[in-house]
Image (cartoon, rainbow, N blue to C red; front, side, top):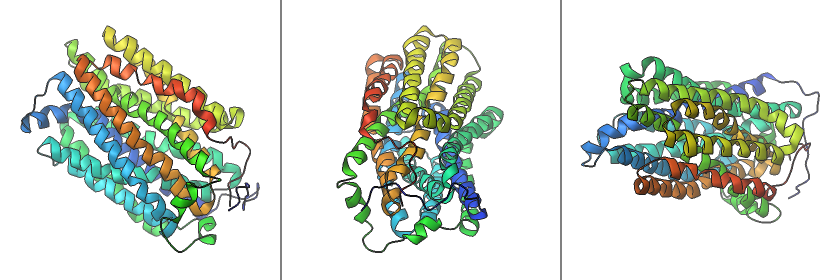
Length: 427
């Protein structure tokens, strides 16, 4: 199978109606994915404070931090299991894979709101993650294959901003109605994405590029292809780079709401909910801005250079927030480092552009899912270690500050994947 870059789209190719609908469906699904994921980051502390005693467990600050990390690790394990959506998309189509993943994460996010103990809560989070994890790979593949070649990089960045727009909407909802809804009501809003399935069923068709190369046979053949030469080295390299990114997101950025809530409670302030919403809003706004800037950075500095820049920002943000502001009890300083965490978090948008450029259509969704889902297993182990560190130290500070280390390693590991700047999407 040739690796030579090809394109079936000309530089003058217009943005057609089917391409617009495909992009809208992909962005909508990815935004609702971000909406559901952000709910947990905001309501983890109040949910666990209720569910831990109901499960016969202590609910002190360190206990809540530990079980929040355990729940994150379980969520990551579920996300790793969602690799199955890649082969499904390559064998049966992009649209059924999108519909299935959206329904799964919607139903089980809402199910978490019905939990009466921490173990049912964890099970719902695992199953929701199996749905969540498939959305990025399938949506990214759909956009890359549907939009004109001249717009592909730009729309890749716009697509990835969707998940943070969803997070932003969650922050707004929690800020304006969090007290009235409670943590259960927030989870019930997880059913909203299921409505998107109606649009996907009626308005979105399979990309022409995929239809022209639709294959039959074993669903697992793409897995064998991406793990053999000439793709094997880049496949494992992409997985390593995604492990770096996911470690930082789940152990650092997504813990911001819990961290600032604890700072507010320690200071005797009564605005913990407002501050948790505020830090989520700040990071979401700056990540959205970062995603919009990623196409420019990727064209100017290459895919590798853009990733290095954003990894460096994550190092600054994590060390500033957790090595300095949190141990000092400085809420203002913590908020001041949130923009760096937000903009740096746009490093995921680089992969939305970069991964489809490295593989042909027949195996593209599988390769995308391999890196973006299986990386969660390694990150889950790291997250459990951080949870242990929180218990051992009695604080979030040192364990979360150490999440800067994977990004430091990532500055040197970017060469594991090929530079694809200026290349067309392979056929």
